[in-house]
Amino acid sequence: MNNLKIDSIAVVDFGSQYAHLIANRIRRLNVHSEIVLPETSLEEFKKFKGIILSGGPQSVYEKGAPTIDKRIFELGVPVLCICYGHQLAAYLLGGKVVAGKAKEYGLAELQIIEKSKKNCGIFSAFSQKTQVWMSHGDTVGALAPGFLKVGTTDDCEFAAAVNPEKKIYTTQFHLEVNHTPEGMKVLDAFIVQTGVARTWSMKQFLERKMSEVKEQIGSRSVFMLTSGGVDSTVAYVLLSKALGTKRVYGLFVDTGLLRKDEAKKTEKLLKRIGIKNFHVHNGRREFLKNLKGITDPEEKRAIIGKTFLDIQAAVTKKMKLNPKEWMLGQGTIYPDTIESKGTKHADKIKTHHNRVPEIMKMIEEGRVIEPIAELYKDEVRALGTEMGLPKEAVWKHPFPGPGLGVRILCSNGDDVLPNEYMVHEELINEYLEPLGLSGVIAPIRSVGVGGDSRSYKNPLIIWASGNKHSYNSNRSNKSQNISMEELEKLSTYITNHFPVVNRVCLLLAPHGIEQVAARSGYLSDARIAHTQKLDNIVMKFAEKNKIMDDVWQFPSVLVPLSINGVKKDAVVLRPICSDEAMTAHFYKMSYPRLSKLTKLLTSSVSGVLFDITNKPPGTIEWE
Ligand code: XMP
Image (tube, rainbow, N blue to C red; front, top):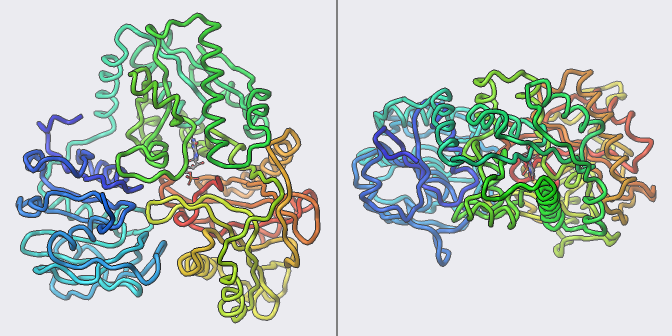
């Protein structure tokens, strides 16, 4: 924790999924920042060179919604207010907040309308027209006195506003995400305006962490849970560097929910980078037994997290480790915490396996060490590189702790459809049909995120009905294909305007759907083997076609959907581009490639779907 002897920016956490992302962006600009709660006193706020108010899941009118001492706007330091912060500033300073016409998630075009550069202040770093990323329900209906409207979008009149005299900048959109490409320029301009010193570096972080770790551990040793993934490997190496390899003992649990041959590959990689002090436990039977018959995603996640811990407890018991002499080490990174409702005002998106109640209890008891818990993946990679780790350890695709457990959707075979099914007719008749498309709401649900809250809704499957468009690369006239950019706009429009669905998938095979039904399917040896086989085909294809470096992750998801009477599961292709997994867009794979890959998959499935949903409103994984 910064004792504020060094220059710092305060990031006020109203529970946004993105509050720590703002801190990450500030660090990228080599500036120290500190996450603070809205309840922080005015005296404390006076110590900062600038203040940024984050987004948050609530409405300013909600009972108990977080607020802030409005005297922070009079401190004379620049204040930047994002999303909920934008609404709160308007509300506290005499403007008006109203419910938005439509909940808006995704891309929008910002138009700067204020001509005076001086009035625009830090927003003059924006081009006159630029892409921005929205994720909100409420919106500002009238600005507070002293504020000027600087930028608008089609759906949001007051998208960017300024009080030039007091140096208060507010935006409805998220400046901090990659999908606002000019956001960093504006944050940089904010940093310049605050006059804060640029003193943060990864080298310095590493030195600070190593001494913190030594202090926290004292004379104890670390029992490190490792998965071979980037985060746990980097955390493991950092701990070994700080404490010496003998005081860090690793446990690698093969859950049986890993990719094909992944356990063997992981063991090899860990040994190659000098991690030899570890034990491999084959937990396949335990995981399968505990997950038998479970269909609810959160229940699955809780069971997987608990099984990890039971195994760890059994191994420590066998090794006769005294809890007083050992701490549990984890490679938790920031998004694991925030998506699991890890901060005071955040909403729960999904419980990551390293945030189950049993672990939370151990954290409270001071028995867990998580050296990289405040970092994002891009920073973990930079830290790994700083410590000299090879590319294949640092740039490996992320793979979730619960593994295929969250990529194999389970169902008791009952169709689950939204109550407002009539929307379906409106969607098809009025919106899809004129575009030459057909669609059906699939009778299963997946997890998504929007406006900082979790959603659990149905996906919409669309396909070309043949008149206008085709997605089939074999057609001679390729220009008839709907472009990936159009598909992206379409999926954003649909999820914004028909909130009964949180995902849109393009049907790659068969050519159309006459009938779709949920089929019974749980976590079983057969379904795991099936997913591993499909995933292996997809991974090999991605490697051969050099897609691996272009994507952040390429999950294949097994979904219990029988299509046109074929009594088999269907598969969803989910290639995704991202920087830190808080926002992501689907990878725009070319039609010829999609068609080739589909042909490799069709024989063992009822259908092949291509997920064309960005995050938000979808999440990367389906559960
Ligand atoms: P979502 O699906 O929330 O995922 O968009 C964001 C990133 O986190 C990974 N993920 C997990 N990683 N434990 C992990 O270590 C988990 O429980 C977990 N769930 C999701 C996901 O693969 C993506 O990279």
